[in-house]
Image 1 (cartoon, rainbow, N blue to C red):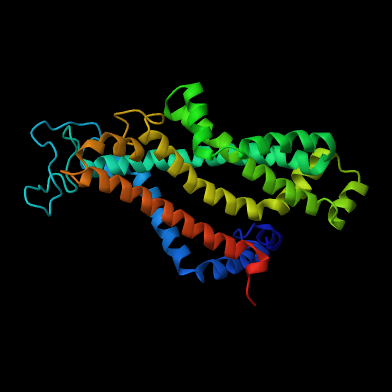
Image 2 (cartoon, one colour; image 1 turned 30 degrees about the horizontal axis):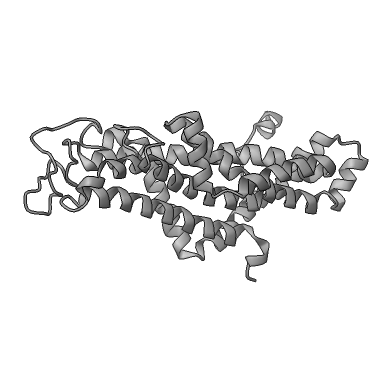
Length: 304
């Protein structure tokens, strides 16, 4: 009986070293008040995106012909049925902004993941093998970097065809050189370390050395770059939507909403200001969060 009790598995505990690393990370991250504010605002956006159908008071495409260009409720002529007013065809601005959060976060996640995965793969190969492989990969990246990012994305979308999917692919291709260069530099530093040499002597193959031994120690700067690329992806997607090359109407994407509202900028300020303010606050919050991640993950910036 005693043996049975002794062999009964107890509650699962968190690795103390992992807990200590998280505590250290949070200590340095929380020292940056702007980063904490950005984090909570970003979490708020995630909640909005997930529960958009429950939070939004109206369907984003629903048109109320008797309520065209109704101002926000605090202005004269406003209505509590449309808290932030309506657009030129009678659609509720608040509902469209809430559903637009879904599109913006989706764009940021997909673009960042595509650029990150492709950039890591090419960067690890270039940094580990060097030689002609490195030369070919880096010259292609240099060619991409030689063009203004938004202009190149615009050209790629024009070739692929307007649409949200093609816009995300184009932006991911434009962002990829940043991840390739960062990964290559980190791999070149790490590959001559003692732990890599020891793994090589123990018989580890090239794939295991690249992706299991070296890559995990190169992730800190890549995480910071991914955060900054996330906000840039939202900005570029909004720019393409504004130019008519990204998400197409009636999609409630913030850049597309701005494009639809251009002609009403003087007589209905809310249809332009509110989507622009949503883009501004979202990008600002993500950039502040990225600064906090840099402070917490870069050992050179850690203060004793």
